[in-house]
Image (tube, rainbow, N blue to C red):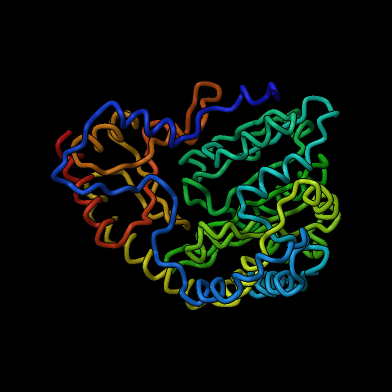
Length: 397
């Protein structure tokens, strides 16, 4: 077997299950999970109708490059959402089976393992696929801490030049998982200049881009920054988007990668051999989802309501702030984050994720220490009940 498999750590939820298995929750309280970032809002009925109507398409092999109608729909959505001059649906868009699959696969195709000690650089804390994809591509992961004093974004100015020389792929996650932080135009401009100077690819994971409170400005995307800077070929830049969070369709496994045609052309060849074409009925359902914004606006309204209610309850007892986007809160805990999560489960039957499970210790610093991730994905009433139980637990410490 591939020896690099031994470098993979247990997934955060495997660690969480072990932590919870050491205690017993009260049986008089219903369990409320704020741990997994899986939307619990209903899937749009019109998308389900399309799936039912087009189910006979399982009789047809799909193509890796996707239906022209889907690619055009995605290109048009990108142009509308990010005010882009143009996106070529043929050369600058590839449908994928969710961002997780695409991020992993793109890393395998993008890394040149023959170069000296290649690096895949990512934020810390981070989506665990960045690390696993790096190791299995033959690269090493390099983590940039996302600390409160820098707005929970990496301090790119503090990265040594030697790291940039070895960097082949830089992942950014905006809005961030788990911090909810976003990058601005000046951040993207800085990163694009670095990518040009040191010859690496800039990959932006933007699967939470459509979840933000109603009063906030929509988060900027990498391609939008490219357009504002006159970089209409999106050179060295790719983005990943998904219907999982935007449209409450995590099981549909539908998203896309878009950007630099010179990067997507060899990636399409990789995918042809990889065998990961999206089923035709899924593509047709995806067209319906990308073409509708009403359900996305309703989604945002529900998350806005939940954020407001939960923060009203928790702010007096926890160091917790409204995140810029995403459906996460990233509060500081008054005690060790693992102890907090375990005892909260034991006493209140509420599950949260210790922040250290989403990050790595580098130079003695773990950005997830004394933090938990709370995913406000349950119903509003459940989120409010969970917040009340968390407050009661904190007040008992």
